[in-house]
Image (cartoon, rainbow, N blue to C red; front, top):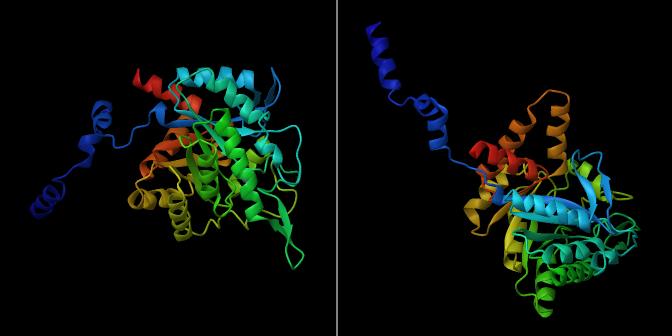
Length: 340
Ligand SMILES: [Zn+2]
């Protein structure tokens, strides 16, 4: 009995529960803290005025015309949210996706409205063509020798570069190429520089897995592929070393920020990338991640706020400094309440 007591005393020299004893000490030693400034809110924009189209698979989110997007941006700015990530939903689609580079399209229109306002928000424009092509793929198609169709990488680069220039012209602080075409960051950097937009930054969707978690987004953006899937350009979710090579390439091509997507399935990549690269790291908590929490909360199976903040904290803990999330507005409110 005496021996057991001695042993117990030795083993418990460090009692981790001391630092969990109350809210104040837990708060004091917390390793990862979220701030509204690191949050980026995705926003789907359409042409016209006064248009608000609810997105059924993304509860609480709507497609907005530029005037209503401006209202939303004012709210986000007042909450201290760091930035906006814009996706355009065009009126017309074509095989090339040329609408992505149309200066009168919904994204440039919204950027001009927002840029004129001078809000303390980083304006980020997603650069891809899948919302603008009639087949829903991320670039123009080519027919391969075996008769299959696939995205023509180098023709896609031309459209992506033109779109990035149009968004920079309209006031984007950052362009974010998401097509997963080889060489897209280099093509966009040189097009931006050649058109006098040296100051426009690039956030590369560097590691983008072909994921089932994008389902609700495709509904929101009307960008589901009409045939096949995106596995010939987005990465196999099984591959982590390849993800790091993609990041290395994008960094070498001139990316200013590196992003991984989806977030919750890429925590290992964030941790490895944080050790390996000195660029800011962003993670996109994608539509399916939002929808899983939302759906469980609606059924009363999970606490919505708790699950949202816990997952965002884990993504930050893994290494992401910038958090793109459909919870951005609410999370900023929750964080303000916690801090109050
Ligand atoms: Zn795309």
